[in-house]
Length: 510
Image 1 (cartoon, rainbow, N blue to C red):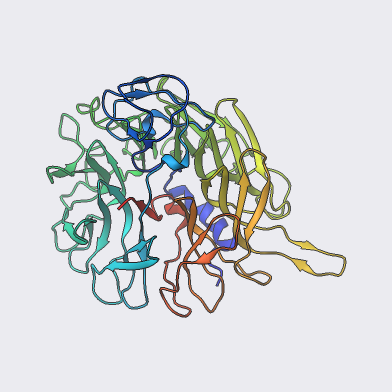
Image 2 (cartoon, rainbow, N blue to C red; image 1 turned 30 degrees about the vertical axis):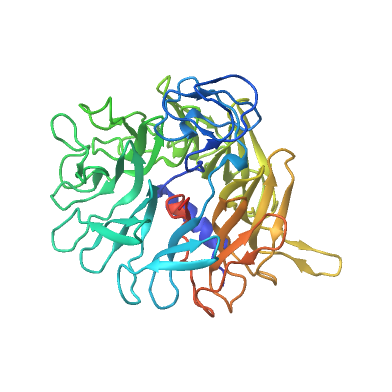
């Protein structure tokens, strides 16, 4: 029943030495309905206009929106940071995720928000399932990795208009599959880690959406980042201002460190290492959990001396610095689940306060004031281990353990691992729901996603029910969207914490 336990979270923290990273970011083009203040250029009216090439708008309010977060492809020159209300966001119509109705195996499922129904694409007939991963939406299509049982794990494309899926077989050597990972879009191309079976190992790979061309990313000498069969094994791909950032090991003896690839300026050189956080030979800092604000990449890394802590790469000054040694000593604070919200980085980490075991709580770093603090200390004794941080209407939602308390009568109060929220303005923290009733019962909320002012997430409220898709407005009782795998069967698969944020619910406007 316990889909997420404290033991599993501690184990996951240890596994994160080889894990992947992520952040929270807006999705979809934004139409400005009521821009306030400032001046506008090229727009006949503030109402209902969409910013396109050659147009600019100045808006004001308290919630920052970076130019890079505006409609993709727009010239952001002259667009200043301002705010857009939730009403300006496009309506989300569908949610996509891997799931199993008990007969299909784990396949690509589509949840229609309006009709409260699910449909699926059966790529691999039978109970084995194709197990889609790294789902990414680009212009009405989904790109993901899946295994049809014949070609191995390959790149697949789902067309939302025709409701059909097709394969792009990158590794044709005997059904081995190229196993695409960390699929990320930049400039009309997909970038990901793959092995096409030509003997060059797992390297940075591209797929051109328009031309259907694909291949390894190479330098002017036609070399991959790590020539030879070993491969550099790129991970944790993240886009910031038209540049791709990722971790890799080029085999030169520095270990796994931070790299960048600019498709315009790095064509000759290929991917470039931009930091050596851990200077010890063959060690590597293994950057994970990347988030971006104002041209800076924040990530979790281990310099070999202070343990795993929060770091920052500034693309303007080309410098890498540690933000804080949050938990002094070699153990480190192990930052996870980085989320960029309103000029702040929220994350979970061991704040170093006395506790039984690591005191992993919700942390906050204000990038404007350069201030670090514990945002919420929910469980003073054991640590609450927040996860899957997601913002909605000024509140940050996450899964967490409650404090264990015993009253004067000897009764134990403990809600287990449930849905919590933190008010960003006031700092107030409260339990949203105790879905799994009873002591030491956890609903284990995961894949927490905001769509149209509602939260959607996976949870299990009882041993008699499996993991299903739930929804919440953050105030009233959470409700299951349905019982799509009847009985104790699990509709949603068990979450892999160190695949955050690539393993997630994907929102689309179609």
